[in-house]
Length: 154
Image 1 (cartoon, helix red, strand yellow):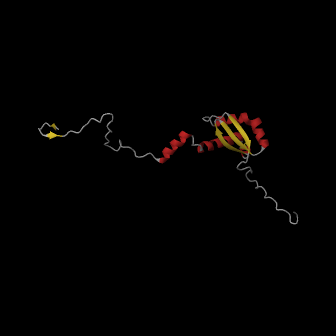
Image 2: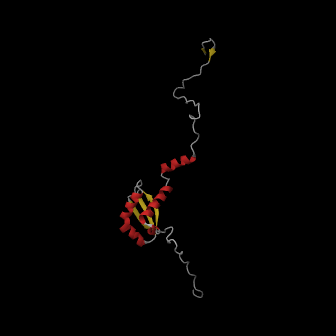
Image 3: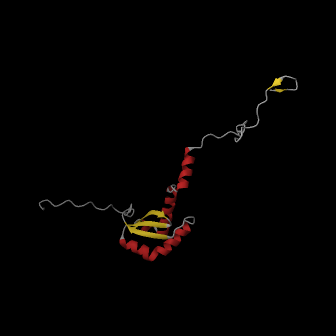
C-alpha cells in the first residue's frame, strides 16, 4: 500500500503486465471496438479463392470467350469442358467439326481466347468427341422419336 499526499493509504492499480505477456489495449469508444465476427460468406470466399474453387464466374467467362472465338454456329456443337494447367478442354459433337477446329482453326482460336482472357494462361486446346448439351439449332424441330415396330412382323 502506498501513502497518498493526504497521508492516507491508497491502492494504485498495477500498470505493468505480467512477464512475457502484453497488456490488452483498453477500448473506450465504438471506433476502437472489434466489429464482431467475420461473416461466413467472407470466410468461404477467402477459402474458395485460396483453394482455387471459385470457378463459377471464371467458367462463364471462359464459355463466353469460347463462343466469341468459335462463333455461334460452331458453338452449338461444342462445349467447354474445363481449363486445367493452361489446357482448355472442348467437347465436340461431330468428328468432322473436331477435325476442322483442331487442324485448321486452332491457332486463330488460341489467339482470340488469349485476347479475350488476358489474365488467364491458355497454352493449348484439346478437343474430344462427346455429347454436347444442345446440338439442335434454335428454331429447329426436335429429333423424331423412334418408329414403333410394324404389327405382324417379328
